[in-house]
Image (tube, rainbow, N blue to C red):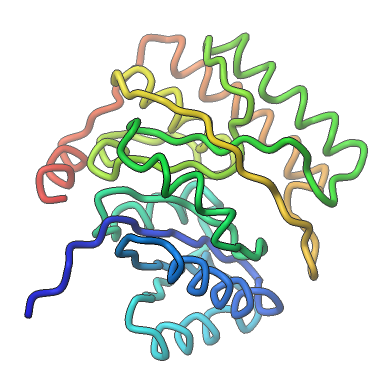
Length: 249
C-alpha cells in the first residue's frame, strides 16, 4: 500500500545543541502525532562541534520520519536552505532545536495550512530575553518595515512556506537576516501571507546565539547588506535551480 504524500516538512537547524536536541525532537514527534497531517522532520547539523552530529544520526536511525543532514557551518540561513532543498512536503516549516514544542504550538499552523503561501508566527512575548534582546526585537521589525515596506509584527520566528515557492528564491544571506530575505522575496513573488499566534518557550539549557552582541551586530549588518542588494534592483528571486526544484516538488 503506497504511503500518503508528505504534507509538512519540519526543518530543524541544530548547532551545538547536544543538551536539547533529543528532548526537542521527542516533543516535536509527540506534537505532530496529535495533528491530522503527514509530516517528516529534517535535522540539519550545521557544523556542530559537540555531540550534536552523533545524536542527530541516532535519532534518525530510531525514527522513520526523521532524517539527519550534516554540513560545514553556514549559519541559520545555510541550514535552512539545506533543509528546504531536502524537503518532500508540500509545505515546509522551521523549528529551533532549542525550543520544545507542543501540539498547541503547531495547531495555529495546522489549522491554517493552505490558507496562504506563507504563515508567519507572531510572538506576544519572548521568554528569556534580556533587555538588549528585547530592544532589538522592537528595532528589527521597525527597520524591516522602513527598509522594505513589509508590515509584519514578527519577522524572525517560525515561518511556514509553500515549498515549491520558497525554493524559487536566490538567497544572499546566511544568518538570521535570511528569514527577512525569505519574506521580502516571497512578497515580491506575489505570495500571500497570514499571521498566526506562535509563542516562544524559554530555553532550558545553553545560551541563545541571538543574545551575543557579535551575532546582533552581524544580523543588523546583514539586513542592510540585503537592503542594498534589493534596492539596487537585483530582485533576482527566481533561479533556474529553484525553478527545477519547484517543478519536482
